[in-house]
Length: 288
Figure 1 (tube, rainbow, N blue to C red):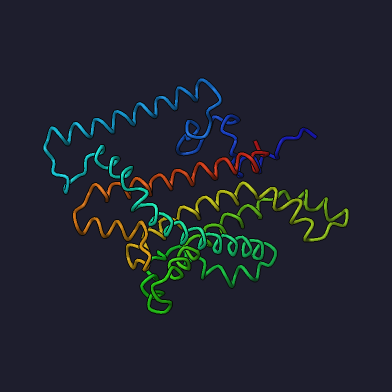
Figure 2: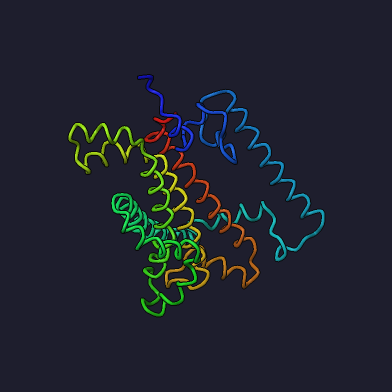
């Protein structure tokens, strides 16, 4: 046996080993996720250089054109505001958003993974569940936040539920896709040796589906973060949050503070991608 993945699996299951393939998907992120080679060092240097050009170039353009701060904030002022006020202002609101996001995401991802396993083993369950999953995927969950506020009050739980409803279907769809892309020959061989359904799931289906499961976790986390921030903008909790700060600062035309919140949210999004990339590289790079 050659040890290589079958062609049908190699073509369909995503790989997290950036050095093993020339195809990186729509965007090549290897400069952000690998620092071992000179080539990667050059890529990282290029990214930093381009960032510096954009950052200081935008600063010069805004100063040269005398653009008022309430129209567009200057990058240096935004960065200075973020550094000076992070501990006293932004840290609290970052914690509020992260609490809502992490708790909701954990609930949604767990339920989504369980439902994916269920519908893979029980086709009838898929026929019952699929219409509701389709509704949740195509409906923005932030639309339910005002309704949840009326029912559950102004604590964190309405946003936690909204995050769970947004993240769960993404995890379920990708995980179910991975479970179905299992090599049937391996399952037949395991059954011939008397393996139970649970053993087949643990030893064959789950390991082979792990790359798609991690992709589902990644996509679900992005949807969950956007729902948490958007839900706070629609109906913030009593504690605040990054979304609530966006609405507050924009209403007062305090664009330096507004830009600082945008930077925090962008940093969270990039961090989520890098985190799941390394998780996938550690636990799901066997396919490459």
